[in-house]
Length: 162
Image (cartoon, rainbow, N blue to C red):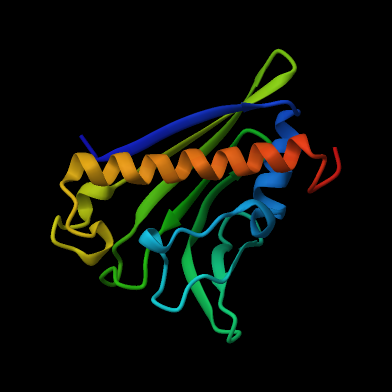
């Protein structure tokens, strides 16, 4: 079984609005974490370029663009799948993030599953020497904080219109 992190949170918005804010306003709600930076020069501004077949990129203050991953599925407003890599990953090595947006009464449950960490060796710099369980716990805490930031933006009425 693959090493993965799964976190979920409900937001008071429709799946369409939540999906739109997630993808179109990621640069507003995304909170960089120095422990899990994409490049040594991070943080930059995250954005999705296009839809399926496009890219998730980080634009650094210098203007240089780092490709975090390819968008593998763009099924608005229900599901988004994209690759995730750091600059230190070997060529062709990445992990995968699946985000689902499920209507639950008048809210949307946003679930993030970030899998494939078993393809990254334990001694890799991306894991900071943490044992696997602790690494996954810390990474899960960051994803929880990111979803809380997404929720705060939606609750404040920020981001893409409904």
